[in-house]
Amino acid sequence: MINMLIVDDQKQIRDGLQAMLRQFPLELDTIYCAANGVEALDILRQHSIQLVITDIMMPDMDGLELMAHTKEERIKVEYLIISGYSDFAYAQKAIGLGAKGYLLKPVKRDDLQTAVEHVWQEIKTRQALSRNMKHVSRRAKEADRKELCMYMQGAANDESWIIQTQQQNPDLWRHYRLCLLREELRINQPGASSAHSMESIAYRVYGRRGCICLQHGPHLILAVAADVDTGALPAALKAAQIDTTIVMTSPQKGLKELPGSYTQVLELHRHSYLFPDKRCILPSQVDRLEQQWQLPYEDIYALFQLIGTKNSGKIAQGISSMFHKDVLQRYHIRYTQQLCRAMVEMLEEYERVIRPYMGEEALDIDCLRNLFDYPGIRDYIQALQQQLLRLNQFYYEFKCSYRNSQDLNEAIRFIHESYHKPLDLAMVSNHVSLNYAYFSNLFKKNIGKGFAEYLRDVRLDKARRLLAETEHKIVEVAAMVGYESYKSFTRAFRDVMNMQPTEYRVLMRRKYEREGKYQDTAL
Image 1 (cartoon, one colour):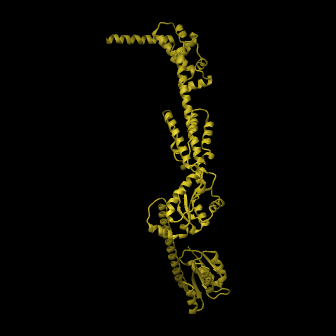
Image 2 (tube, one colour; image 1 turned 90 degrees about the horizontal axis):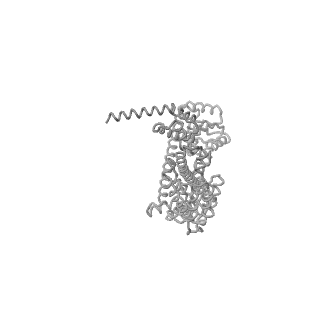
Image 3 (cartoon, one colour; image 1 turned 45 degrees about the horizontal axis):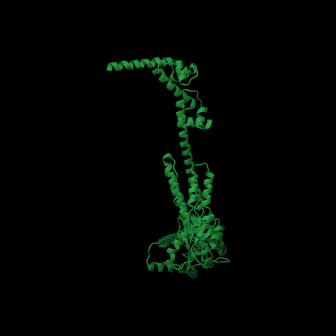
């Protein structure tokens, strides 16, 4: 699309040119109009215009003066000149100022169309070249950045490349720091990354020659001028309301120091986990940390002794105590890493014992192996506490299940041993030292039927054997299996077997007789 400006002190000429231009097969966007050069210059300053068609002879500011002013102000625009005077001097001066054509009034439609199309084709060609050049330039810069990034990360490069690259920005590489920026986002926090915003702010703080982006992910790494105050970038990011942790290396001299500086910035980044409340970490804060320590193994063992109890609060308290910032901030980051590794190893030991009883449930221990997979130390401690509490719950349920299994086995043994005596739920629950209501629910949940139903089935099973295999009277059988009355026995028997005890006895006798005759025949 093209924006055009018509400049002429006669309205009928402006309207006529505009009408003709609207009829041409051009990708026109907006056509502006001005009565003289002063108005035209204001429009050119305010809008993006590609082509101006202007009269030469106008009051206040003529067309040639307008061209001169735009050239002085570096306003990029093309000109077609129109004039009622066939004076070569005007044309020569206009062409000297960069006019693309000179048309005499009255302007002919075909001449105007030819001139405009010719200029528009030049504009499109120039725009395409500009885009291509910008694309080539971006690709070249990106290639240079990738090569710098690889060199920073340890890839070998020859001396000539180092010298050539250093000469592209000698002021920066003479005295620089590496700067790593980690945006503070909580786990599962929505929102797009602000990496490009942070990079843009850094370029504003250090200037284009004082800042080079070396890496965009997983964290933004910049080489920045070391003579700029270390507090300038954190202050600018804070003003932009971007919550970021920044680590900066000590000043470096020369591109040869870049790989070592990269190692230092990664080390500082790891230490930033120890100081979640600080937004700028410098080498001086890490240099004072103790390099020798003894892990608190007794505290770790004491913590895991709580596993399988109702002391989840003490477990959470124990984790908070071991990972307290006053402890972690005394030592090098390796202390925290070793503490995390010791906790994971204990989790694995405990999980190995209980794994056969966990079914499809499982702990996610792998998520705890690398502290730096988390946005910050607090997120890691929260994940560790979650897995410990899950382990505690598994162990507690396992212990309860084991204890309940023993209690149920004893209860069932007691029922089979005492079915012929007066027996109720209270007696059995007392025998296994369990609460009445708890035992009732436990029994039904694990056996699949209530206590009364289970006792009835045990007694009737014994009764069926006595009816089939002995000559005891029905009333005697009822008493032998624990029923206090003949009626309650026969009613229970009929409800389960759909027949009276006498009918069952006759049926079983006939069955035995048939089986006996069959055996005799077989012999």
